[in-house]
Image (cartoon, rainbow, N blue to C red):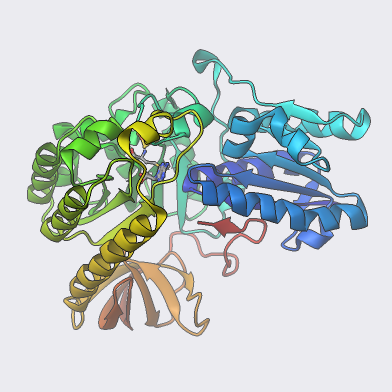
Length: 460
Ligand code: SAM
Ligand code: SF4
């Protein structure tokens, strides 16, 4: 029996792509192993959104070289770094066997055949034409025993944010036809999945035959599906119709990740984000009015070229004003071929120490706000979808609220059950408590409690 190991870097899109790779490898009689040292094939599914992600990938590749030397393991690199670097990666890493882009997952059997049979070093990074692109359909058996699952609804991005490499590594936006999405959601519900997260780089510009709002509403009607989430959205595509969907359909979870990137209009303009802070706040206000209590999260880039102390103060002020439940904040990282990287010297690079100091200030503020929000929940009862044992203490249970707050609690409900939990304590990112009652049992009893899938290792 041949075994494979996939090391996944980056976002949910890559986690999902790794699952599809695993299914293709399964058709070649490869089975997953959680131990890289035992693998006959190692694939690194890479991310190039920031330079650090690329560095992590290169150092992991160095570690896997020893496995290759010891047992002749095949080594491949997929994902965004592969798409960006193409042949250059084979030159840079002489022991690498193959490189393949996000559109070439279905070609893995052919690629592996050529590497093994013809001893060829293969590069497959061609784009498939938008009209011809077929989204790989997830095998529901891969998700049996899981409670929550990602469903790809689109790929690529047609925006041109000046800091972002995604349009270069993931290509043009293509939406998955809605009947295909609904079929996949229904097949997941049949194996016990109760929550789906629709994923894509900019899901609210979805055009797969219905609007994104209608797609959410239809997913919410699939029998067995109790929660629908999505990520990620661009503020300029946040339509009134989508806001209305939050008002009318309670199964659409009260959590919106709406990346703002900066609180300063001149910075947003240089980022080519296509909205002002006032427009962003107006959308956000409508959303809060439609669904009171909705949790808001965002992404922020700190130290974008030309960002002054005044610009940064506006990001701090926006954070205070919105009181996000959580923020994902990053130091600006220049990316190849992007507008901002090409114009960094004209706009004025921000010194690294200044970026670090600003990031720390922002994160400290966000921790305080997140802490205040979660402390206010102590003593309250929350509804939790149980996902399995707690990662930190296997004697406790783990799940999430509809607002996407993580909860570790004393209880015995199986994965897939909805329970009521009394919150007893809180940190900025997590609630702890005890189970009061089971509100609804799982639709399908899980065959066994599954830990995180063993074949993938996710690095943020
Ligand atoms: N499509 C989403 C949107 O429009 O906001 C963003 C998806 S991107 C994969 C995730 C986040 O990475 C972005 O929101 C941004 O904050 C961050 N990011 C992207 N490029 C970056 C860069 N060059 N340097 C630092 N952070 C970056
Ligand atoms: Fe990148 Fe998101 Fe902008 Fe697309 S919308 S270019 S993925 S930041």
